[in-house]
Length: 435
Figure 1 (cartoon, rainbow, N blue to C red):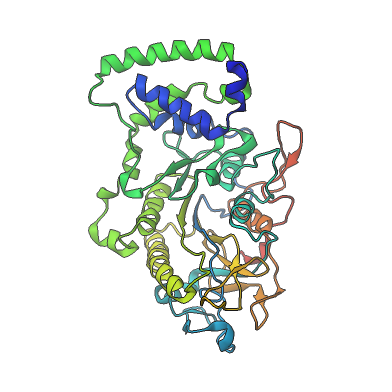
Figure 2 (cartoon, rainbow, N blue to C red; figure 1 turned 60 degrees about the horizontal axis):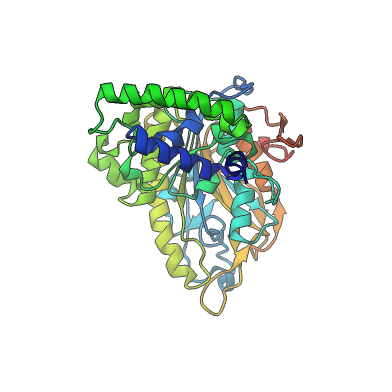
């Protein structure tokens, strides 16, 4: 196999890792080639918002593992066999009740639009997460772009010196550009409190030495691009110019949580998810377009009620803190906060006091960005098993996010194989949720 075929058969993340290794050893930085994907270019054919009052940014809270709708946002207090020991409380939204495990969120429900009619045809985690993030089912012949990549492609960056798409604490697979290329992929961060690691010149490399190495790297790039003509390789053209732009950007401070007041940090919760939500707020303040923060641990086949209560404590503080903080700063109307899950959990409680996978009915929500607060779209029956009205698929949900941003959700993007795709897999947005 030739060097050419070895490179082109690698997946997107492998190619990025190759570039990271080269930069670490040669330039004294390591994260910048990962950033080059996001920084390399603005969107092709990006259009201004098509909807008056459209949101400018998205904070997407990914509940990985399958969040129980019954024990969070769609309780069934009249059916104790289904509800189990999970308490149910009233909220600031008239007539809307949610889990007693979410008291702080209950106080914020006047801002929240609940989707209680979510439904998917994927009952396994990997496939469910894939569909949730991409609107399309997994195929062995293609990698579809993640939702953040669609947003970047259709809208472009707001701030040209830092990444436009950042994923915190989740799988890098949920941040890929897919067939659109690494250019539109997200920057994956692990611990939000570590900031954007290695985004400055190493202390052992002087300014003069860095400039010399940069010049040599550019020459090497020119030779490399001449030898490897594939589109995936061309994606990295201009990488080091963008890297230097990032390294000198004043907006890098957005990634540094130590600039935040201690009381604000406590308000979000002193854990990875809470601090990830705080980092997301800081990033959208610096005009980052799309930030995803992941909270795992929702796969509650065993001891569902103990596990869900623990997860809800983390979610409740972070979500309520985020909504309150955005409102206080005047950012709630321009920011769409989304909470999504790949599926729900069974109404039946199994012999291990757990709930199993349940794709037929579950809940998601949106806040801000022009959606109606204190509003419930869709419903399930008394047994929480069947969507009785307002059915919404992942494709419809993603198209609604696109509509909130004023994006052309009907616009077709053609894959390298010539196949047409849209942000919601041709699904229509749920427009009745908007004020």
